Length: 184
Image (cartoon, rainbow, N blue to C red):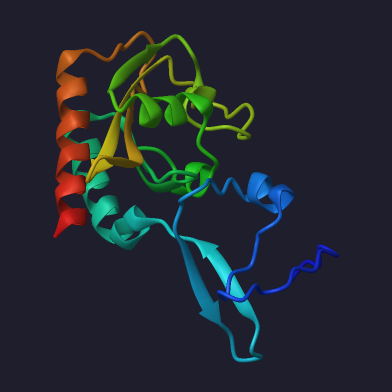
C-alpha cells in the first residue's frame, strides 16, 4: 500500500475526510458510494463501489451475445473503467479508463453516435492500437433509479462501417436490460 503522508482524525460522529487530492486522483465524487473492507492485518480499505461491477459476469455474457450477433466490438463500462469486452481482444481493453465522451453520455443521460473519432472516443490512455481504430461508435447510458452507473458501447470493427439507428436501439436495449437487472 502506498503511503500518502496525510493524517486525518475521526470526528465525534465517526467520520473521516478523504483529502481532495486523493478524491481527485481516484475520481471520487461527492455522494459516491464507497465499500469498506478490513484485511487480516486490520487495515481499513476504502474502494469505490461499482454497482454494475456486481453484474460483470452477466454483463460479459450479454456483451458476448451482442458482439456475436452484430459483429461489432461491444464494451460495458462502469463509471470509471471497462468491465466487459467482446468482439475484440479482452486484454487490450479490459479495465482501461473511460473517456470524457463516455462520461458526457452518462451526464447527459442520453445515447449518442460518435463517428470518425478513433479508439480514444471511449477509452483513454490506451494509445495507438494496431487494427483497433474504431471510426464509429454508439454509446447508451445505463441508468438505475435516475442515476447513471455505466455505459454500453458498440463500435464498428470494419473500415467504413457506420453506426446507425439499429445499433442505437440495440445499445439502448442492452443498457435498459442491465439497468433492470440492477433494480432486482
